[in-house]
Image (cartoon, rainbow, N blue to C red; front, top):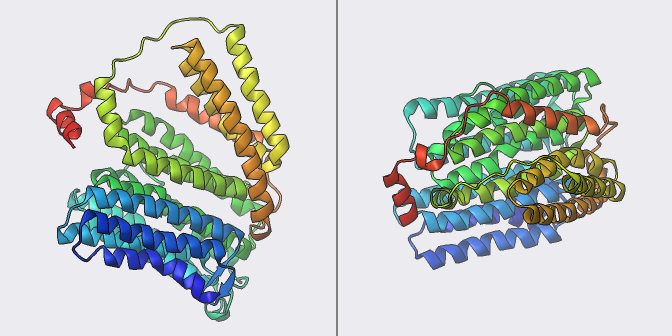
Length: 459
C-alpha cells in the first residue's frame, strides 16, 4: 500500500516533468489528465502508512482538494502558456508545488512535514522567478515573506524537539511545545501573507493568472495545514490559542478596509485571500478544526475559479451597463426571504451538528447580504437567489455532518473555547468595517484604459 501513496504523491511531479518536453497543446493536456487522474485514483484507494507519509481522514480530504485544484490550474496553464522553455519550466514547477503540498497533507513525521513546508516555499519562489512580471523589490518582499516564517519554524523545531521526535517513525509529543507552537503560528501567518498591506500575497497579482490561482488556492493553505497537523503535538494551554485568536482578529480588522480600497479585481481577490486564510487560523484557534478544513476546501475551489475567470470578468464588466438600483423600504417580502434563510440555516445546523452551526454563523450573513443586494434590483431574482441559497445552506450542512463523522477521529479538536455564534458576529463586524468610510470603488471603464480592455477582449 505504501507504493500507492508514493504513486499519488509523485504523479503530479511526473506530469510536470513531461510538460518540460516540447509537445502540442493536446498532448500537454493529456499528460496533465493522466498524471492527476492517477493521483486521484491512488488517493481514493490508498490506506495505511509508508514511513514518511500516511493516509488518514483529514490527510485524504486535504490531498484530494490539492489534486483537484492542481490539475484544474495545470490545464489552464497549458492553455495560457506557450511552447518556450521558460513557460514549460513554469508548468513543470507547478507539478513540484503540488507534490510538495501533497507531502504536507500526508506527512506522518515531523521532519517530513517541515521539509515539505519549506520545499513548497522554495518551489513557489522558483515559479515566481520563471513567470517574473514584477520588480526586484517585489520579489524581495515575496522571498522574505515566504522564507522568514520557514526559518522561524525550522529554528523552533530544532530548539524544542528531541532527536526521536525528528527521526522517529511517527511524530511524537515534544518537550518544548510552546516554542514549536509559536514558531508554527508565525510560519502559518507568514504563509498566509498576514502583516502589513505590503504583503507578498498582493505582489502575486503581477504574475500570470495560472500562477496567481495556484498560489492563492494551494500554497497559502500551507499555514492552516501546518497548524492542523501540529496542534495535537504542542500540548499548549488555552492561553496560547487565545493569543493566536487575538492576532487573527486584529488581522481581520486590519485587512477589511484594504480589500475595499483595491480598485482592481485581482487585487481584491488577493487581499481577500489573506483575510480568508486568517479566518481559517482563527477557527483553529477557537477549537473548530472541521470548520477550518471545510472553509479551506471551499475557498480553494472558489478562489482558483475566480482567478482563472478574472479576465472574462473584466471584459464583462466593461460591456455591462451599471444596474439601476431601486430605492425601497424593507417590507414583508424582504422579511419573508430573511426568515427563509434563517430557517434553512437552523435546519442545516440540526442536520450537521455543532460544526455545521458554526459554519452557518459565517455563511448566513453573507447569504443575507447577497439576497438583499439582488432584491434591490429585482424582486423575482431576489426570491430565486433566496431559494437557491437556502438549498445550498441545507446541503452544505448535510455535507459537513458527513465530514464530521469521517474526519473528526483524526483531528483531535478538543472543546471549542467560544460558542458558534461568535464567528457569525465577527463576520458581521468585519463586513460592516469593510464598508465604513471606504472610498468609492470606481468602475472598470474608469480605472482600466481602453486599449487594455481591447487587448483582454482579444485574448
